[in-house]
Length: 262
Image (cartoon, rainbow, N blue to C red; front, side, top):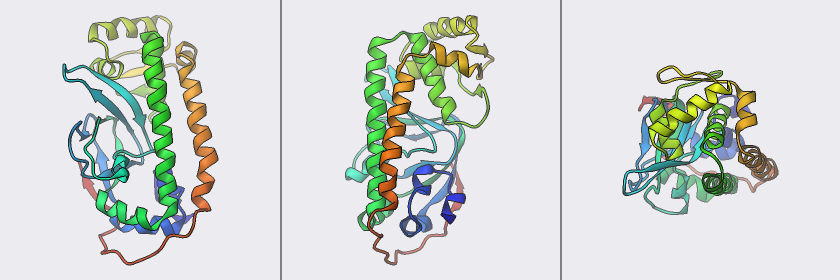
């Protein structure tokens, strides 16, 4: 597909050209700045974001201020697709943890295309299933496994969704937010992973990892979750390509891929 060479998001690139054409004129390329908040818990979802690079963490915030990550999204997914179920406020906060770029579209524009395209509807179903898989595994992992194993798993998830080598731009505050533990606990865990050489170095705001050693330390949730998500994508993706053709109609045009900075 010609558009696959221009679209960094795998979910969008999998769409047949005619279906992608329903979205393309209304997509805006934006920079995802490190630590930028795309949407806060309880806020109205103003746009859908399809990452092309970088990593976004979905964070659950409790009334007492405690936080914990529930999923990490990269160029294999999207943020804000719950609006496909109807107008809604975000149940979680979406925070950019590794800088990158994304393609954004308003919920209204996306819904018009969704109604005309079974392929886009199939993409929404695939993403929903992969997110539910992450949510379920993370909930079980948080209850059953050690903090060291959980941190190794999160680092692997983030590494999978970045292309910056073995150095991850993560502070101890960010790790505390991901794990739902105090920073003093993070300090001990990072020290333990350094002792086992799974983390090679931990300078301010950066972690240099040894992926092979992290995979040994991570709980089985990492491989099980990765396999199940890959199975969902590999089994369901062909349905996107063989879905009924999109009902093409004229939508008021926007300048295609106009670049903005968030």
